[in-house]
Length: 86
Image (cartoon, rainbow, N blue to C red):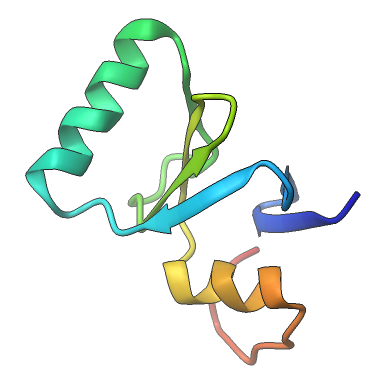
């Protein structure tokens, strides 16, 4: 099982990850609110600004403080040189 670091020591299963999207659009904000109401929202941003929303095949929605491109690189196994926490 491959795990992806989404910041602050939090990991998600690569096999369960469907997409990584930016949280800026209105449809994504609605998706986050609906997940919160259903109890399916996991906030892994540690109080920081949400920069990526991860959609899982279990219907969970996970918030991360890392950029989507950073998570994409980690999923691909690339090493990144970044100042972001994680």
